[in-house]
Every structure is written in C-alpha cells, then in structure tokens.
Length: 316
Length: 269
Image 1 (cartoon, each protein chain N blue to C red):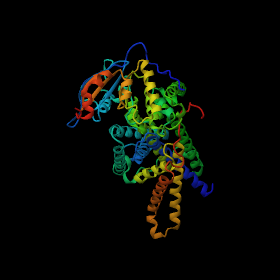
Image 2 (cartoon, chains in turn red, green; image 1 turned 120 degrees about the vertical axis):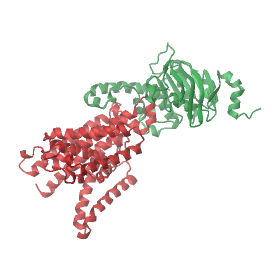
Image 3 (cartoon, each protein chain N blue to C red; image 1 turned 180 degrees about the vertical axis):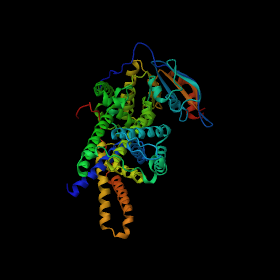
C-alpha cells in the first residue's frame, strides 16, 4: 500500500468510529431534542471501561482483567449506558438547558477522574500496551488496519441500519413528538420522561461503544484523548452533516474529520516553525467557521431531516 | 364531500364520560385562579364553559387534563379520581383535550401526528422494531387505516402528507380533534375550537362535534363565540373570577343578569 492509501485507511477508521458517536448524538439531539454537551465523557467511559476490562494486569492497580476484546467493548458500552442512566434519572425531568449544563459538568468530571484516579485509569500516563484484537493474525500493520477498517465499517453499518429501523418505527414517532412539543405529547398519553431516558441511554451506549472501538484500534487510553474539544467536533459533525438524518451524521463525521485532519496537515506544512504551536487554534477556528456557515447558508446541514409520512403509507 | 360517519369505536348504548368537578381550587401564589368550582359535565352531553377572560377556564381545563393539578377538591371521570394523575395517565383514562393555541407536532406530517396517538403500540418499544418487525408492521397498517378514516372524517385528507406546522390554524385545530379521536376517548375537552377559524371550517368543526356527540362522546367546550355555544351546548356553565356564577341551558343563561354583569363588569343598569 502506498503512504496515501495507508493514511486513508487510518483516517477512515477514526472517521467511522466517530460516525457511530455522531449517530448516538443524533438520536439524542436530532430525533429527541436532548442537548448532550458531554459527549466526550460517555466516549471516555466506554474507552476506559474497555481498557480496564481487556488490559493486562498491573501491579497495585484496579482492573487488568485481560478479557477478550468483544466482551471489553460491550462492557465499556454497558458502563456508558449505566453512567447515562444515572445522569438521565437525575436530570431528564428538568428542562433542556439543565441537561446541557449537567452533561457538560459530568464530562469534565470524568476527564478529571481519568487524570487523577491513577489506580484505575493510569492517571496522566493513561493505560498503555492494551492488546489489539487479532493483531497476531496479520502479517503487517497495513493489513491489520485494513481488517480493523472492515470491522468498524460493518459495525457502523449495523448501527445505521438498526437506528433507521428504530427511528422510522412508532418509537421514533414518539421521539419526534417529544422533541416537537412535549406538552402535546403528554396530553396524548406519551410519557416524555421515559422516552427521553430511553433515547439518552441508547445514544450514550453507542457513544461508549465507539469509545471501546477507538481503544481497540489505538491500543492505549490517555486523558488527552478526551478533551472537551471532542464534544465540539462531534457536534460540528452532526450540524454540518444534517441533524435528524443518520446518513447526514455519517457524512458529517467523514467530512468534518477530513477537514480537521487536512487543515492540521496543511498548517504543519505552511506555518513557520515559531507559530506551529498555535496551529491547533486555527483548526478550531476553521471548525467554528464551518458551523457558522452551515447555520447561515444550509441550516438543515448537508443531508437534512427527511419528511416522513409513514413507511406504510405508500408513494405519493 | 367528506365521509360524515364518525369512525371511532365509541359505544353508543351506554352513556359514559361523565366528568364531575367538586370544590376544585387552584392558586398561583395569592391568586385563586380556580376558587371552589363544582359542576358536572354529563355523560354523552355537550357542556359549554364560558366566562370573561381571566375567569379561570383554561386553568381549570389544564388541571382536569393533569397539567398543573388542583390544590384541593376532586375531579372524577365516570367515578374514577383523575385529579392526581399525570397528563398521560389522564389520557389513558379516556380524556382527550385540545389546546387554545394549537400544538401540532410541526415537523411531522398530519398523518404522523394522528398515527402517533394509539396507546400500547408494540412499535413504541424500540426493541420491537428489531425483534418483532412483523408485529409492528401489521399494527402500523391497521393504525394507518384508522388514521386515514379519521383524517377523512375531519376533512384533512388533502393535507394528510403535509407537515402539520405548515397548514392553517383552523386545520391545525382539526388535526388536534383527529388526534383526540384516534384514542376513542370517552370525553373530549375543546379549548376554543372556534377561535381564529374561518366560517366554512368552523361549520365543519361544529358538524363533526355534533356527529361525534351523537355517538356518545361527551364534550366540554370553552368557547367565546356565543352563537356557537348557544346552538351547540346542552348545558352551559358560566365562570367568573374563579367561580361558577351560573349554570343551565341556553335560555336560562341568556336570561341570567349575573352573566351579563360578569361580562360587562357590572356596568349595565
């Protein structure tokens, strides 16, 4: 494989992993109107959960169970679900801005726990030399990456198909009703608290699941992978791609991550050495600009929400 | 013209949907918006609730529907206490309501608005869309058929695929009526069904209320259009400053000087 192809594979693994995160957020925001400002926190819970479950034993540390990767990543997703359930029970009765503040605070707390609870998380060093699933089967790293891309692509497809089923079902109709007008939904016999809790927990489960996949690929976790900027990037992906549409979520993940990595590359090439350390700020500005331009000129995103009638109603 | 046969499965034989309000009080701080109200909306009758602005009608409506429960007193529907239930539980007991300012699910089609309503749809559990798709699809087809006949009854067939946020205010009131009918309610509370509706559409609304009432559905209606109230309602309850000041049939209410006083603020001689 050429350098470019190898890089493309690497890029797509990360982008498709993020696409699962964006689909999770889309379920919460796009379909239910839940403002989750702590995406990175649930991503981190999934990632650390997986790392602790699959990692090798360490002296004087909690975890290191050495479990098989599939169990680890499902365990990580389950931990993210549990975290979401606790947060959701505490906050989902409140109005939306409270959820935003609470989730934002929780994401910060989770990152601080990751940084300081050394026995569990390895502290600032993180957890390293985590086993990468089926690494020894492949002869070269390039082949392994290709394999991992296949796994992530299939999982993203499965998540996409499962979510499409769910959001076009009567359940999805209730989600949208709660998003559109909670009072009216309540007056028609729907329980908004229950519906929001389901959507929130399910979305966070997917976000945590993607965190586990991320860890399986890069082979370590550190607190630096879970900075608040990631939440911002994920939101940018959803807004640019098209909130309320799972294809938009995937397109946004690939598009925005592409722009992010390419701008990073470009900055490292053209910026004089003494300004390189400020280069990251330019990337953030670019993403902010992209969000503003999207909201101004294409507020529905690249692929906006579809107007659905009923999939059983037949063609127009 | 529309199909004028009500498509609901409401029982015609037995009278149901009797709503009894007893000594209901609802305060906001020092303001007793509903101040010891008692009356009965008789089963299978149309009861009008009138009164000047600020009389407490909508507050009472909301309390009946479980939005902002009463502080004291009781509300019963066919003998069952409903005053301590959450709105979605009140609805499950057979009480549907519309809103003074329509609350359509704007980014959903008219059809989706109506299909949302039936309770205990298997597909409302997200796992059933994965594990039991056949069951969900079958219920959806039945649901669609019923929704279509109610939409036709309400004269909304031409706009059934449009977003509910994009149709006229009068049509949105009809969407609310259609949503209510989808649940086969015992009683429907209408908050100003005639407000801001053009005369032709108003005729449709009145016509449909009468047809549904003939099927046995009880109505409690807040309305400011007196012609509408007098012609439609079997019985009228008049509220002013949080209290019931008169009740009776149209002739009794028209003759009652207290009612005129309440509307004119006691200015008439």
